[in-house]
Length: 259
Ligand SMILES: [Mg+2]
Image 1 (cartoon, rainbow, N blue to C red):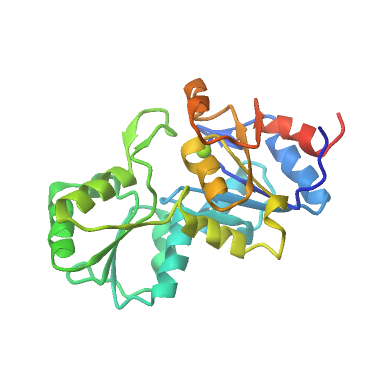
Image 2 (cartoon, helix red, strand yellow):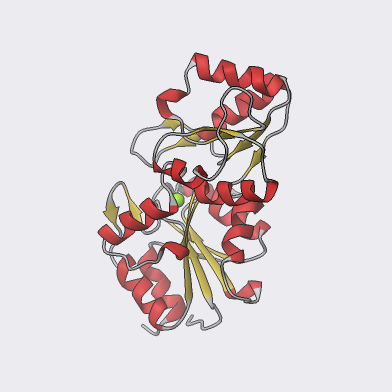
């Protein structure tokens, strides 16, 4: 089963390397071994609350050796995408450190060219959502950081960004642009940070078929599903099939190293 073909491995974070504050056994060591083999590493997270900087800091605290350039969060990817649009002004509906990524843009919550939707937590109240609706009605464009409507990663089921994005789209009768996994934008940005590597030599490792594995398929790279984090057995009924399935991230060693 040993396989030397992969030159780059893109890891999802939540549910793959760690879950609910605990690092999975063997995760730190696996990344070290891959790095020693000069395999390019990226961390691709649908987190909107964290910036690239604070996500890297968290990983370092947990014992991972990673560089900021190797970490891509949905907030970072959204800001990169937004740069290409050169917007006149934006209203970022987001709480947390992810806001750092948008510090170079002109902010205007009264008449923005774009609304940027991230995890706004309690900011998702009637006043703000209604204000967003009215702006979208008048022609403001909507960019939503992630598609996912629910989130289990904190240990309790929560409504998340995609649910509000869909609601605003439906209510205003407009179409939003979605950035995070499984959408192409975040994969384009992640792949653009890698050197020229044949796509079949790039592996995405994730715990969710609907985001990690589907996104990898769309991006035409290989994928490995790990049965940890938010994985549920019924996910395997999906028509989207990963190239590899492992019980935990530690088992990826079988793919790269002799037992
Ligand atoms: Mg995950």
